[in-house]
Every structure is written in structure tokens, then in C-alpha cells.
Length: 393
Ligand code: GLN
Image (cartoon, rainbow, N blue to C red; front, side, top):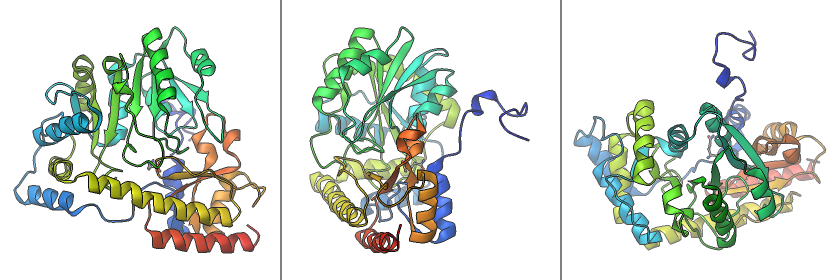
């Protein structure tokens, strides 16, 4: 039975497609390819987090944590936002810990967006925002940004806002483009939000991984704290994507609604792992964060050089850990066919570019590489790519 016409499944799911990112991981596994598709690190997490999580399990921290997060982690988060960004955050009423930033964004939208509302999403985008809006009965309105700069300008942003707009989603540093929004672009978003009385829902999961500029939380701009919901998490900062620890900072009246949704969806995030994250946040200092960015810069440079030598064209990302690369001088295939072909015959998996665009045609000549991998693995991938290219792509 075709799911589309099926009476057996809910209509809200009928427009959803399977995650191309995770599908490519399966293709990679079948082909024994190096997986530079799905963005998960392949190197160890900091010992302080692992030790504290193990200790918590040994100490029988096995039951539900407080729904919105352990006091230890909320305390560490309040200190972090104060120390890093000068944001005053009340751990009692303004923080919610969730099962990953994925659940965070879904809970935020289900808590704050009404059916019939519109939510502005910049394209290209990370795959979840559109479906999150759909789950709310709202409509994602996609605003295309043009390569290679993907710069945000006033006119198209103003044009995307209607009387039904409820929120703008802002992901910086960006997956998949690697853009880090400038203060000027953030001021533009803030201005539009203030004038049209909109929320901004941010996804700042790559906040500590950038190579140029600075990471500025939108909530720190004038008049934005009260209308911004800041989503982030531990996955990328501590290389623990499987721990599923996400975080939400929101004004207390918004937090109340978000916490109710979060409670009904998941009750809470894993208690012992929250203890691990709290210890990491307490004990790791500047040196850790500087090291993280420095190592990622090295990985970026190694992969960028390798793919350039293999004939791809790509700008170096300013942040996050992905490179969107143009393969048109290597092949005339479309992105889906090319990504599968390169996985099977080149031994390196990527994600087809079209899965990040509202209009798939815009990504037909692109694939996304993830470089959250050891240098050895990136170098091995580089060898394979150069060989693949020499063999004719
Ligand atoms: N954030 C990671 C990526 O973009 C993993 C997401 C996923 O598995 N869907 O690759």
C-alpha cells in the first residue's frame, strides 16, 4: 500500500520523506565506504564527561531526572550563558534540557506555534525545521539564500514575512552551508522580528565550532532576549551525538509551554548523561574550546584541500563541520546518483545536496561532506577521492 494514499497513517506524515542523511549512512555501510555523510564525530569524548557519567550510573542515578533538567546541568548552563555571552539566565524558570537539539526544536515549535501560522526557514536548511513546522499544523515558508555566500539581505527577508508569520528559524554556524551569520545579518533579523512582533528560534548547536568571525547569540541583541528561543546542546561541543542532550533557553512564560510539551513527549533527558555534561561544562576551560576549534580547522583544511585536488569546487566553511561541494567538473550525474556512485565506486559517502533545498534543483550539482572525523580518516578519504577522480569520476 502506498503511504501517500493510505488511510492507515496520519496525513501529517504523508509529506515527510525519509532522512537522506541516515539513508546514506546505510549505503555507506553496505559499500564499506568512509562515511563523510552523516555528521557524527568518530573520535573520543572528553574523559571528564565519560567519568562523571559512569560515576553517576555507579551511584545509581538511574531514575527520571527532573523533567526540565538536573539542577547540576541547569546550573552549569546558566553559568555558561553568563560567562560566554553575558546573558543572565534563570536556571529555575528559563532552561529546559531535552533529548538532543532535535527534540528541543520540536518542543519549542509545538509549544509556541499555532496551526495556520507560518515559520520562515532559510534555504538551504538542516532537514528537521520544515517537518517540525508541519507537525504543528503550521507552514514552513522557505527563503532561498544564494550560493556561494548565502548572504542574508533585507528585501527577501521582508518579503517572506506575512501577517501569519510567527517565527524565523536561525541556524548559525550553519549546517549545511558553513556560514556564520555576521552581526549585521543578525541585526537585520532582529529588526524584522521586533517590527513584526515575531519569535526567533535559533539552532546554535555548532556555537563552539567556527573559524572566522564570532558566534553571536541572537538573544543578546537589543530587544531580542524576550522574543528569542535559543536552542543548543552538548552533541557537537563534546562529540557525543548519541547521548542526546539538547538545551533550550527561553523567557519564563515561553519556557512554561515548552516544558509541558517536552514532558509529554519524552519526560526528560537521560539523567546520568546530564551529570556527565554538567561535569564537562564545569571543568573544561578555554583550553578545551580553543582546542576543539583548532582541531576542526585542521580537519577542514585537510578535507578542503583533498576535495579541491580531486576536482570539487567549494568555499571553505566559516563554521560548523560540513563542506558543500560542487561536483559538476567531475560528473554530469545528478546529486543522488553521483553520491551513490561515489560511495560504491569511490569508497567515500556524502549527502546529496538537493536534500538541503526547498527547490531540489538548486542542489543537483552539490554534495555535502562532513569533516568531523580523525585526520587519518580524512586523509584516507582524500586518497580515495583523488583516485576516484583520476579514474574519471
Ligand atoms: N546533524 C547531523 C547531520 O546533519 C546528523 C543529523 C541526522 O542524523 N539526521 O548530518
